[in-house]
Length: 263
Image (tube, rainbow, N blue to C red; front, side, top):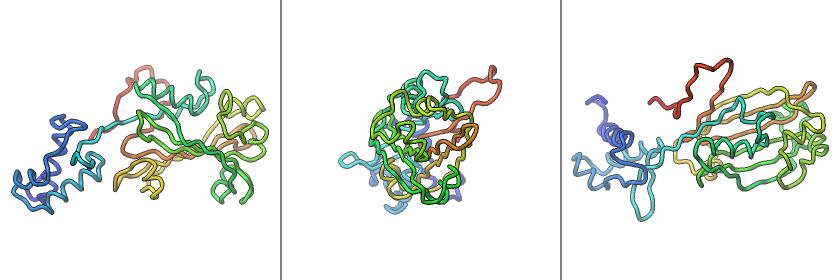
């Protein structure tokens, strides 16, 4: 950090380095505004700008009665290429998620399940090869890891497939949706993934507990049989605690890494 940079950026940089080095650990309190003002001989506004910068980065948060504390920097990995493979022991989307989190030493769970019937928007109609306004079955959940919201997921199915495969039930599908569709001749043999980033809408920020300035990763998977689209799954990942990994080809020389953040 150059000496010509604004004071608040230099203060934020020093605090950031202390957090990353472990000098100030997750759950510990940062110095108070008064302490920082005295330490750096700056105004209250300068201190607030520095803290605001770190809060926007998701590194700190304000807790009633505790002050400003360091957030746990939990980075989770979603292996997109094989997470939903039918040949896995856990082939249901929710079971596969729980298994993946267990492999990472975390506890996964899902809450707030909703089954709804929705009209196909122009985008959904184009991807699922149905008419705009046709009825689709939506099955939505919120995923949690170690008690914290991880992602929002909503899967859309053409009505004829949903009726044939028992997807209109407001409960889990025995054996999982992917297997239920395959049992009726709708086997997923390919998929197209689309990944984009954007800022969250207010409802997404609330459900995922996002701090101001934190983006989301929008992950859309459309699956196909040999004759038609079968499913579109929209997943909204909290951008400050997730990475999506694709493992393709011969990877016998590959060594998995715990965290993709090189900053």
